[in-house]
Image (tube, rainbow, N blue to C red; front, side, top):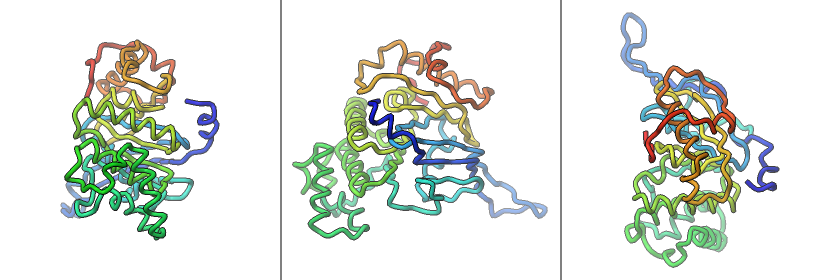
Length: 293
């Protein structure tokens, strides 16, 4: 991370304290709720301005649920969460969310898809077009601006989804397994593209993934969640140089981080802890070369 970017990381863009979520059942037995389901328990997390944080954990642990709470699309049951020190009470334009499904409007051209958030902000038509074209160029798809989503590959659609989220200039990007549906080669290209855009725009990113390698390759820190009800089990500082290239995965330090995350996911009895990069360098056991959980 550059010195200038480090300097900007002095304030928290995102804060969550004691966040919990219980899905209430409509069934009651002997006067009490039966069938209530607790998805999240006591989730606390701070993310600095310009930081890239990956969130990894077993299926059903509440990773996506937590992301939707931060987006304002889902109400929490306990605790509180803030973006830019403003309590989250619903969706807002200070955050963008990118999901597995590309969620592009099939009846709109690529340019019109990217302009959508700018229309919500009621920007003039000329300004909307200029802004959309700038971000379409940023993701390398200027020649497809007048195409429709069905004319694009999966990887290209995901790049347009990123462009659309960036175009209305949110402070925070919330990404829910955005590359899960693309092939491995395309995913690698999208990783490099995302990191290039992140470095250029200084957005604060929370990236949900099932892939241990993906979480380490992209992030400044990796937050590991426990099984349902999900909570933050550990946070690892990822002390690897940037810019990152695929070759870094053969670095012994990368392997040590992979093993550490793998051990945390296997050891369900381990207490929640804050782990420094020095701890992350310890080799604690063998994990699959491309660990996905």
